[in-house]
Image 1 (cartoon, rainbow, N blue to C red):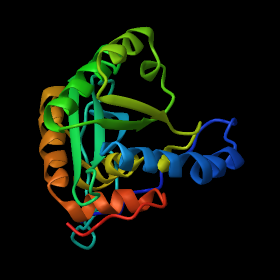
Image 2: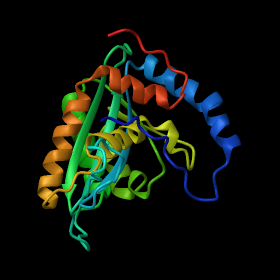
Image 3: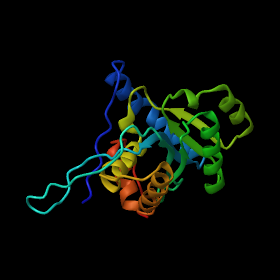
Image 4: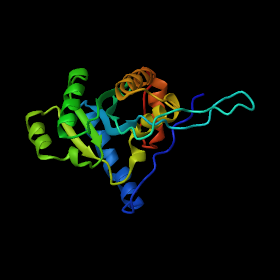
Length: 223
């Protein structure tokens, strides 16, 4: 049974809805125009994490036989993920590119490695849109960007995860494809997440759903 992705939850008390509206009305049209003018791939980037503990969801079962999930407690290993939802310059093709790291957080080095991964798969310029995570603004990254003229950065407004289509991708995986899943170890979790994400990345209709979930005004052409 597949569950629809949930709307990302906004945490923190510093959320300013007016700032978000102003970004959509003022900055988003400028970003779209810049991507069109430079024939750049528009790429939304975001990070997430997958734990060994299952995300428990409702499922089917024989009447009177409540399903049970057996898992070991105190398992702190994890799989960190960084993903990029891309929109081609012609707005016809979408992609979802991902990298996974076992027991390793996403820092500047992992961000730069992922950008190199994108540059190897996408021709031309990249216009990256992401949040204000510290790893997205560090000194090492800024120095690297000075040498890489193909990448231009734009930042989302603070506390606005619902504007990033990756959030709907993470939700789709965790609450749908991987719901009630109990891996034996982090390596098995990584392989399972990779297989599930690869399946999602090959479905244009799902990726378009992630874009539509953001409610950002962007017109996607038929593939």
